[in-house]
Amino acid sequence: MTFLYSSLSILFLSGIILISKHATLFTNINSTEYLENPYKSSKYQITDRYILNLLYKNELKDKGNGLCYSLKQKLSSSGFIGTSDKEYFVFNKSSSLHPLLINSCILSDGNHRILVKSNPSNKKIYNLNTCVTVNKYRCSFEED
Image 1 (cartoon, one colour):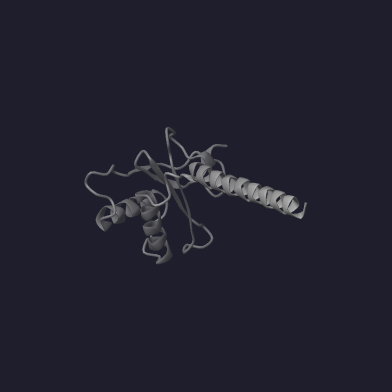
Image 2 (cartoon, helix red, strand yellow):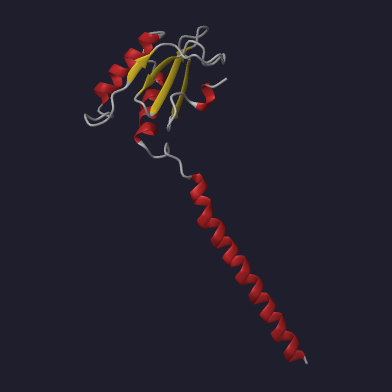
């Protein structure tokens, strides 16, 4: 009788371990599908890091659209944008009414949108917002 109970408990325990192992494998396989991001480890992320570095070092003295033209010039001369890549264009102010986005100048290559604004109270602080626009013209955070 003892042998029967011990073999049944081993059977149940191995079944529970097997089910939990498969459940863990299933969740690990499916979780990567939801976490795929066109921005992560892309040229856009590298471009944004370069712009953040320029703003951190305070290498740009312009305001308004002049700031975006300076950024475009620095990006073009940096080597991050190749000859086969799309060119960034400067657009006028953002149409968003959010206080952090009002009067932001815009750089865009059609897939990557960069909004930059100098802080009026402190000239060394900038607001930088970027997104990858997939089948859209504006970033989702710009829509009011």
